Image 1: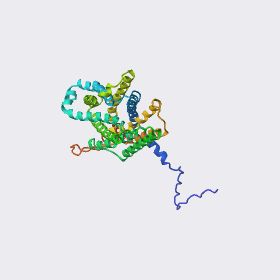
Image 2: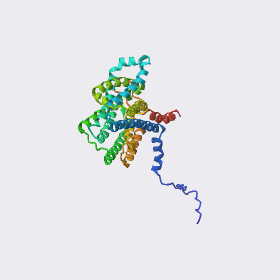
Image 3: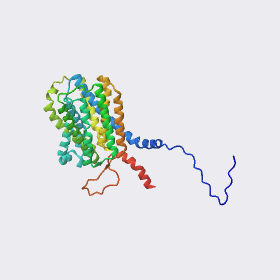
Image 4: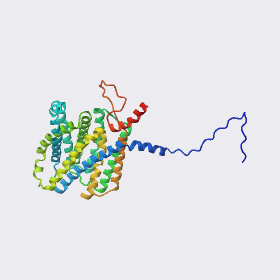
Amino acid sequence: MEAAPPAGPGAPPSQPQPQAQGPANPVAALLPRLRAKLFTWNILKTIALGQLLSLCICGTAITSQYLAEKYKVNTPMLQSFINYCLLFLVYTVMLAFQSGPDSLFHILKRKWWKYILLGLADVEANYLIVRAYQYTTLTSVQLLDCFGIPVLMALSWFILYARYRVIHFVAVAVCLLGVGTMVGADILSGREDNSGSDVLIGDILVLVGASLYAISNVCEEYIVKKLSRQEFLGMLGFFGTIISGIQLLLVEYTDIASIHWDWKIALLFVAFALCMFCLYSFMPLVIKVTSATSVNLGILTADLYSLFFGLFLFGYQFSGLYILSFTVIMVGFVLYCSTPTRTAEPAGSSVPPAPSIGIDNLGLKLEENLPEAHSAFL
């Protein structure tokens, strides 16, 4: 091979030869970004807290079903009454020992009627959902109970001024797809054999109960973020005990009188009350750093946990669709938590609109704002 002759003074300069580069791989470049976006500490913590709430709901479902099937005890209002009494003994008493504007007397004096409505919505939501199982199928309850999520998002839009992005609607759709998969698995395994006595009444009860749950959750998010967790739980325990106690005497007096009490039944009532008390105590903590909508998406897996325990306790049939359903719900939940929403200022507010995002998904927003603050400082 001959060497190239040197370029003369009039010759054009030689162009540098481009270096060989491997083919661009957009997937390989995208994976680290997705990993950094979806698997942060705050998202993992939110997932863990959401599944803790799901386990609490699973505990209430398992104990209630065991009471109904093993001992023929159907007293949802008595079970809720015990929970409200525990809230009263812990959080209402805490408010009673406080002084100043946060004391029990001042809260009752200023906002008693608001908390009556909140207590009524929460008590009736618990009662209607449980009562619906006597009229309609398990499949209908699981599907129609999801009606509370769009209601909750609409209420958050108008009351809390939450503003969603496209990914949030996609995430909710993915979660509902997971619920549909779970319902399909129930149909294939025969868990929806109970047709109920009046399906229409049962479906209406589920829709009303889900809407009342949405109202209660929106009020809870507002109170724990603007006021305090102790005030919400204390006032809910105060008025929930009164309302559920009155309703207990009206609708379940004969059912309670017919119970043949023994230590096993008493232990199941205690287990239900402790699970419900933990659920009510922990949920405000999770809502404060996320939102009521993300919490309701996270607890969609509660039915799956109930199924897994039911495999051993009630002889349920297992289906691989349940694993697929759990995976789809968790994917939708992670997608929803991956992007924080923002909070718009109310139209009549004198405060100028903030350039930053609002208080929803607070942990995610702090994490998202840290690199921006560091860049601005530099």
